[in-house]
Length: 267
Image (tube, rainbow, N blue to C red; front, side, top):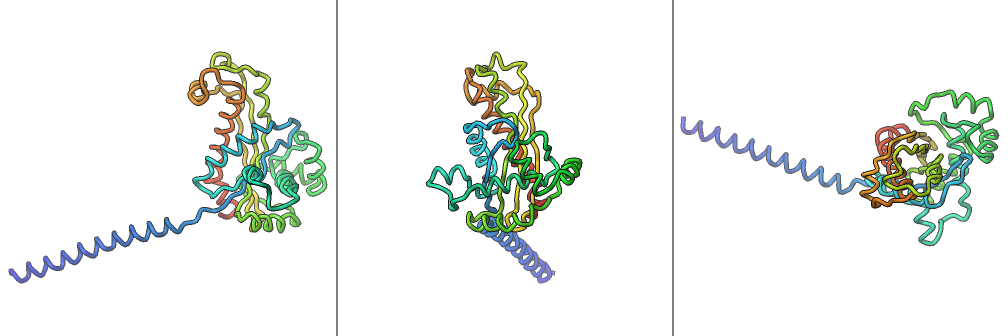
């Protein structure tokens, strides 16, 4: 009986040892995988207003910053604004970005001819046509990816190689300057003011030319004045409010890209 008990003890010790080794190997493999995981690269390609209003430079600049900050957990970020500040783009003719942006807008279900400027109207009429544009606009934004114009996709792939990125992100900001009508906003007089900010964004997979379109918006919202005051002080101005709103939109874009867009365009 003593021999049997000793034998059982040895077997149990071996089992415990094997279990411990398995756990250690699992942890080591997980750490090794995490170490070698490379985040995809994304270029914030263009922030514009393709509606009828002019987009203020500082609004676009702060949205660039907010997107960089919020998307950095999911991507290695390149920003055209940053590249320009560091000495320029790697390509001479940067109008290609506006062309890609307009192409994504024209093929999407969010396109409304009456709400865009003449450049987008003319482009959409030429590549999509009025009939197809109306058809697309009746389609619900269902989260499914769609293709860019066939002649545009190779240029997108080329840009991906030049900039060393996997995805391009475009943002079309609408009505962000509406707040500027109230130029002396403070924690006291902001109450009751209506804010309307709409934003459409387009994530493009450079290898496939597939696009995901999304939309974020604030309509007649009650801004959290305490949160704004905490960040900018009680005597915050209209620019501070706009920046606060841009930050919130950037957070929503990051959330939507993580949950929907990457899967739709083929991560």
